[in-house]
Structures are given as structure tokens and as C-alpha cells.
Image (cartoon, rainbow, N blue to C red; front, top):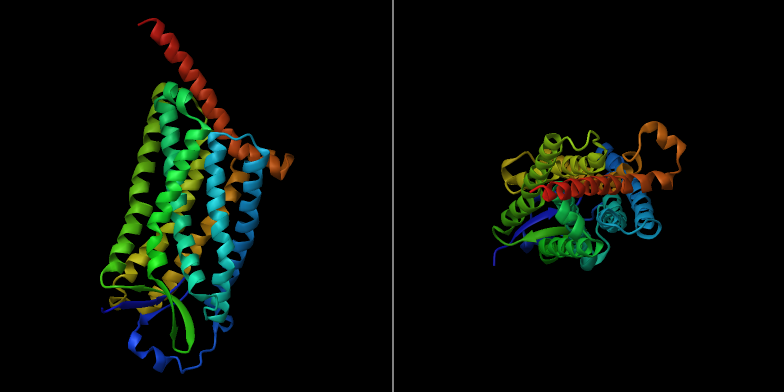
Length: 344
């Protein structure tokens, strides 16, 4: 069967590759030039910072949300997000080493794992953001139902479904990712059969970006309309963290999706532009994994209060503030609905 090969991993992309000439090309000795190229060095530094900040930042969130705070629906959401980002960050050193050496030395199994983890992280994050948005919307529109049915057990079950879907949509990476010898180096690449590349790219764009974006915007539009119409609250604090998380996610992932879609017709585009776009887009997407815990810290309180409280307290306030405000809103709405029902 004819195969369409793309020598493309997190930081490498070359023209189409002919599997019939693997052995001929492998006689060339390849030397890494990353440390002598400004772009590669810049991306290397950026990814090292992403790894350090993301690894320790998400570990801190996992410790606080998982062991120091009372288990609530909100901490369930944020704990799952932190676990997703933490797992992704643990795989970054392999990609960083690949950048430096310009050679994949970790074998085919880890080649498949690192790529799959990236997409599990992408899909699980966006699905969780959709779930949180829907949860907020239901809490505002149907406060009595939410007061009676919104539980940690249900939240945990929903998170489990989101993770299963994320794993299912990441299967193509496990199937089509391969290790081959190319121009004297070992490369971890996507090796697609005809038309599979287009199908995978479009599916990821729709399921991981367009559809979630529409749902989230819809949920927040309903929330804003409901709150303004009822004049139940004048504070925007309940939605600050969530809004920042959503905006950060889409800002980080949009460049990646744009260049992945362009990659489908890479023969018609400037090669250097596509290489740079894929490298930068992937690094910007990876940055989302360390920005989430940063938002947990600084979005919960105002700037002056953040200097007066400890780091742990700031993170607890950031993650717990939404729950307290939503609970007050639910209680107030339930009380109003009860009083209204006695007059009907």
C-alpha cells in the first residue's frame, strides 16, 4: 500500500519521505545544529521554562486541590486539569532532548507515548473547560436542580467520561507515530496512509477547537444574560478564573491548529514558513500547561491582597472562590424560587 510520510515531530518537519530509500539515506551522518541556530536555542529555552514552571506549578496545584482543600465540584475540575498538564510536562524532557540532539533515542514506544500524551492533554483540557462552562451555566439557569444534583460523585463521573473521550481521540497518534532512519538520524514521525492525515487534522480541529469554542461561548452568553437580567450579582469574580483559563487555552492552541491544517497541503506552501510555524505553534501550545497554575495563583485575589497572603493561601482562594460565590448564588436563587412557588 502506498504510504504518505511526513518527517514531523514536535520540532522537526521535512518534505515528503520515500520509504524505499531509507537505507540509502541512513548512510549519511547527521550532526545536530540546534545549539548554533538562534530559533532553536530560543525554543529550547522556552520549553525548558515551560517544563520547570509546568511541572512544579501543577504538582503544587495537585497537592493543594487533592490533599489540602475540601473535595468539591470545583476542586474536582481543577485537580483534573492539573493532572492533565502535569502528565504532559513529564514528557517534555524527551522532546527537549530530541531538540538538542536532533535525533530520537527513546525508541518507538516512547515515540508513540509522547505524541499521544500531547493530544490527551489537549482534548482533556478542552473537554474539562466545556464541562466547567456547562456546569456554571446550569448552576445559574437551573439553581434548584443544581443545588440538589450537583455533587462530587457526579463531577468525578463526568471527568472520567471526558478522559475516556480524550484517550479515544488520541488513538491516531499511537497508531500512526513511528520511528525511522532518515538522512543519518533516527526520527519520530507521523506516517499516515492516503487521506488519513487530512481526516485526523480536521477531526482534531473540529473536536478540539471549533465545537468546544461554540459551546463555551454559548454557555457564557447565557450566563451573562441571566445574571444581568435578574441583577442577582454585580461581581464578576466567580468567572474570572474560568474566563482566563478559556482565553489562555484558545490563545495557546489556535496557532498550532492553524499550522497543522496548513500542513495538510504543505507542498503548496513555503517550507521554512511552515517549519517555523509548527515549531512556534507547538511551543505556544505547550505553554498552556504552565499558565493554568499561574492563573490559579493570581486570579483569585486582587494584587494588593496577593502580597499579604501566602502562596498556598492564594491558590486555595483562587480555586475556592468560585465555589463559595456560586454556592451563595444557588442558595439565594433557591430561596427566591421557594418563595415564589408559595404564591402560585
